[in-house]
Amino acid sequence: MPIEVEVKYRVDDLEEIEYQLMEWGAKLVEMVIQRDHYYNHPARDFAKTDEALRIREEGTEVYLTYKGAKFNEKSKTRKEIEIKITNNEQMSEILISLGFRKALVVSKERKIYLLDNIHWSLDLVDSLGSYIELEKIVSSKEKVDPTLEEIFHAVEKMGLKPKENIAKSYLELILEKE
Image 1 (cartoon, rainbow, N blue to C red):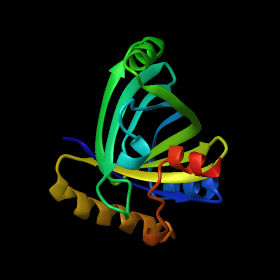
Image 2 (image 1 turned 180 degrees about the horizontal axis):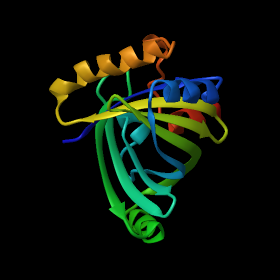
Image 3 (image 1 turned 45 degrees about the horizontal axis):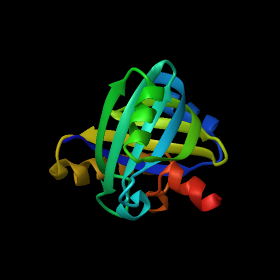
Image 4 (image 1 turned 120 degrees about the vertical axis):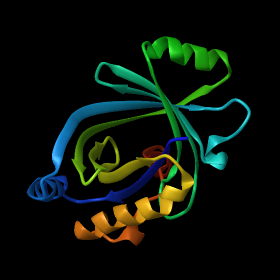
């Protein structure tokens, strides 16, 4: 079961973080525009169960992603299952036919850097502003805590405070703002 160990921070200056990453030898993996179409389950409230279902458009690629409830309050660590699909309109039609409801679309510009096997996403999120996410995929629950400590060490090196981590998704932040 793939587990996404992830932390997020609101930042004022993405360029400063990008410059620091390049100074440390981080490699630019990709620059993308992502549009995440979120769906609500017909029989349970994902806001209460802390789950998410989305269709992500990323350039010419499209993915269906399920995210399970977060493992803890100090990060966004959770089970993640993602599959590539070929047609977002047909997938959306299947979900709607099954009773799912469209919730919201979250759009962002993202630059992804790789440093010490940690993915650093520098995000400019429509209607929210600038954020960074640090992420690493692990294969078991036993690896979550050591990986989270590794990520928090990287965060401290960047001059951020681990406890200021935002454990909410962009969807949750946008819904709170509205």
